[in-house]
Length: 283
Image 1 (cartoon, rainbow, N blue to C red):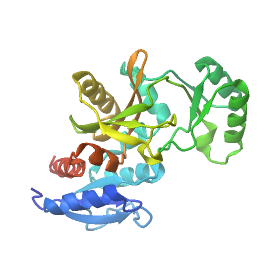
Image 2 (cartoon, rainbow, N blue to C red; image 1 turned 180 degrees about the horizontal axis):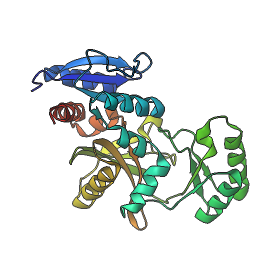
Image 3 (spheres, rainbow, N blue to C red; image 1 turned 45 degrees about the horizontal axis):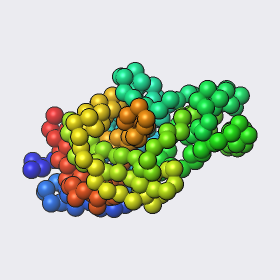
């Protein structure tokens, strides 16, 4: 099914997901160029031997963003497209877009100074969750139950050198069952979905949450597709929570892991991604 398409795999490390993608490409007769994100350079003039399409699997938001722009400069399509990586990978921009599209999402307030961040927490109410604008796996997130706790977390974030910590993304804590939902979208189709359950308030599979398949109801499918479309489409994991007012989308991941989803559902996620990438190369 490759028709001679060469697939570039732009990656940080070869995780189980990248191994699955390499195996899926081999099974479909798709040649793969391995492109470690710490070794590839991007001259202004297009280099020789470029692949026909690139799967952007860098775990670094910055590297993924600039690499996407580099390949776009050469006229090479990427999955995901740079606009999608930059939008969905930035929680602030993604939340604005979800709200603009009428997609239910937790109450969120953004602040640009420590003083404003304290007011943002008061606006959201306690408990509140402070998240970095970029990042995944539940890292550097904090749940605060009082003004004193919020003050301490904000003071700590303000002392960090990274510019990402100068933006304060404050979200309501959603009282939910001890689980959330992840729905995996490839193009215009939902491939699979799972529950992620944990005694911890962060229900990331990377933090040890247990997983189980979820029934893809029409409501869940429609909401996931709308959220993915709002980001620009492609290969996206839509994370949702069950709230008192129904399902809410709290994140859309543009470079999602899928090992746990494959194990929970048996879906050939890697195969669907490779097939989508090959189709993008033919467009």
